[in-house]
Image (cartoon, rainbow, N blue to C red):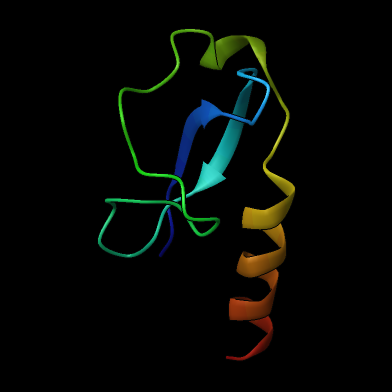
Length: 60
């Protein structure tokens, strides 16, 4: 099972990322740090993470 983590995109805005199974980084390569305090204000998702996640699910 994959978990979501709210971090920042390249512009610093909060987005939901998909964590790798070891939960130390995201599927797009962002290192996991403190979760964004603005996580409750966004429903945006990291496009790269979502593409990678879809590829993982499709390969099963």
